[in-house]
Length: 177
Figure 1 (cartoon, helix red, strand yellow):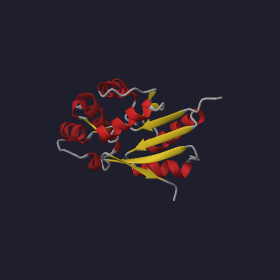
Figure 2 (cartoon, helix red, strand yellow):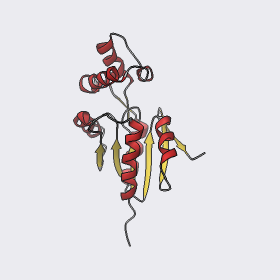
Figure 3 (cartoon, one colour):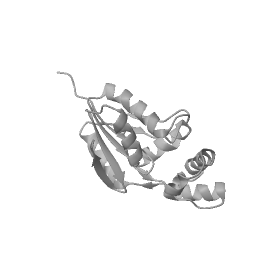
Figure 4 (cartoon, one colour):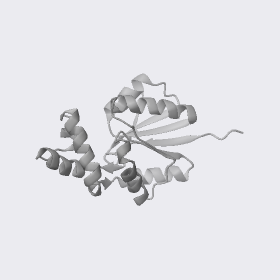
């Protein structure tokens, strides 16, 4: 009998770790004013990239664990699910990402990060999710941005994937309308 492969795919920022404090510190350093993660969406791409770079390289100590979702990942790993971290934060932040996961005792199969930021986050995540769906019989996708989930659900035949919006410490199931 062939083993059924299952995985939980989780975003990192504002899913596993809240990044508002490090974004505020980095935006103050880069732009001279504190911005929330939500306000950062209105900043041009170049400044946004600089803020994220400063946030994750100099202010990663200000990331706050989302204990509820981290606990869920531990539970699912114990049930035999592979844990895969898929974050648009970029390859340049691989070491700090792995360090934060290790500090919280998260055992994972893979950390998937883009090598560059040439395509929008949701498009990149869609491509990566399609690759993973060929390997796994069952996927659970955790994401804090509803627009990313909506984008993917419209373009992906996801019969084997359950989508969950992470809102603070809650997992909210998303289904096709």
